[in-house]
Image 1 (cartoon, rainbow, N blue to C red):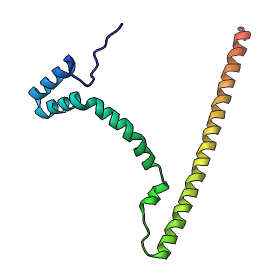
Image 2: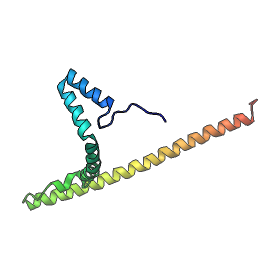
Image 3: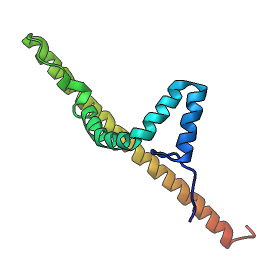
Image 4: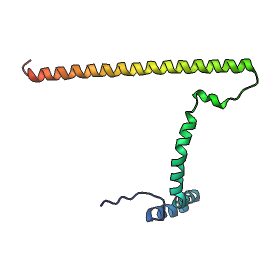
Length: 129
């Protein structure tokens, strides 16, 4: 069994040594290492729980539209709604064009690879040529 020297939360020789070295060199580093030793496992679990929620919040609405409430000016609210819808449609068109272009590039690479392969096979079967 191979044992690596990895840094992990808890009282082990590596983390203890780094904590002492941190206090000697610059006390906030030692304090940070002490916090990691004591609460490192909980921090990792808390981050694992919070990450999906943060990702969902970031992509929940296009352009953060849900963050804007009604202003009280009906004409402006309608204009903003129309513009956001137009921008979302434009974004969808651009995304579709990007997908088509990616497919075009894939086909182009495939054709180039096929041509190189055919040339290789031809030179292999005809070594004198």
